Image (cartoon, rainbow, N blue to C red; front, side):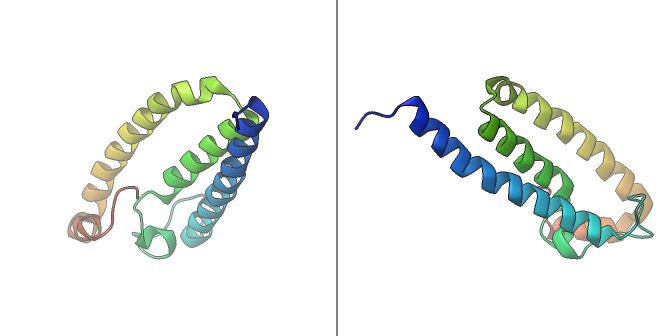
Length: 118
């Protein structure tokens, strides 16, 4: 049975919609865990999704991004995705240096115990 464009799009949507949902759930969970509407917690947050990944917002945004790209069938989003990931990774590395300066040993322990992304 040949694979056609309709079958490909159905498959893309079957994968894309769950990615959108997962991305939104992770983002919402991370925001709720931080608890501060301004996004500036009083201390180092290591509970909720932060117990599984140090960067749940970036993980959630990546899943959301890929899900949207699949559902809407926008090829250029896939083309630029590696650049988006690289740019986000640079921001994450800068944030990690800042966290280490602010929270020192507490952050170093957390960094050893919890993965950066997945």
